[in-house]
Length: 408
Image 1 (tube, rainbow, N blue to C red):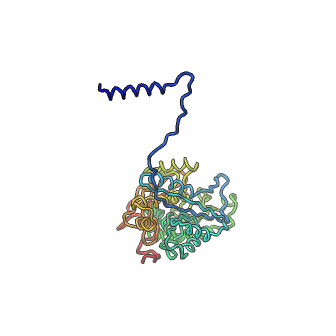
Image 2 (spheres, one colour):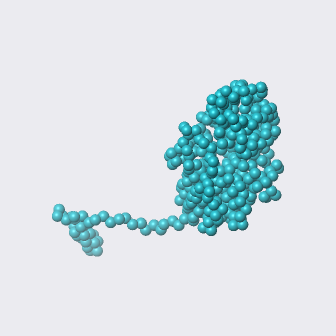
Image 3 (cartoon, helix red, strand yellow):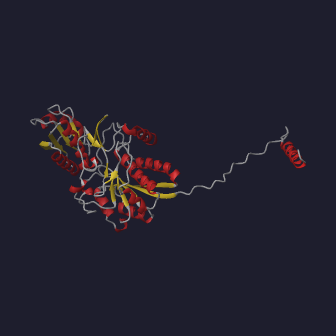
């Protein structure tokens, strides 16, 4: 061993000996670890969610829990999913929640969000408010994601290029149900319509769907307001449905004020469908195919309850933003919007088919679940109903028949 190495080895031995702790000495305090890694800088994409409470809400049954956070919980889960992916793509997402009372000023809150720089805004608002917001001059370079409204007029004569619709429209729901009834050859329908304007709109969608798929409405009746008490319903419903030969009783009761009382009380033993009974929905707690159980479990772990329709479509809206940002490689509004509305955009959504937006009315095309209370019965489009481009466009207004003129 040469002299240099020998001196170096001696120095190391001395240093080690001097560092030993004797019994009357205390070890030095541990120092916190420090990292020299440079923190990753994320491109931030802010998202807002606006909800306004409604006046005169329908009275829920005593055994049903009141849900006060439907929709926003889905948006929160979508944000978590986006940020999980964003750690790898160096993109970050933030969500601002604006919950207004029934008397709140939605346009003022909306303008405040625009002033703060928000350009992706989820809205759970009445259709007339969505029309007002979409037509504000400040909203021309903003995307509104309608996550709470099924009105066909928002996809038709009142459509707007800056509004995307995540919930299925009434026309889509009615078409999904009509396809299933046509497949079963249950062609004779008895339509019962509730007292509200929304009930009338649902009934109109059913009539349109019946004409499209070869069904026949052989009887129509309005629900009598006098049938208010359960004991009255038990005696009057058989008489109310007597004298008609039909295959299915279709009910239009969006508020749920009477539709659940019809089953097992009709004069003839016939199934009930529509807003109650066999119901066409975007999401249902019994759905578990195509990996849906994983989403159901993640949502329940977060929210402590089942995922509802508004939760699901709010999740879809946030995920659509994240998917477009990831695949376009940018959080810039114009690039995200362009990709989201382009031909390459698709969204995986646990329903067995890729989802995308219709250019002609901003509606998200998607399969619909036909479900009873505790059973998933079918998924529409039903096999055998074909379309030249996309079978999902057999549900709702197709491009040749749309009254929307925003891109024509």
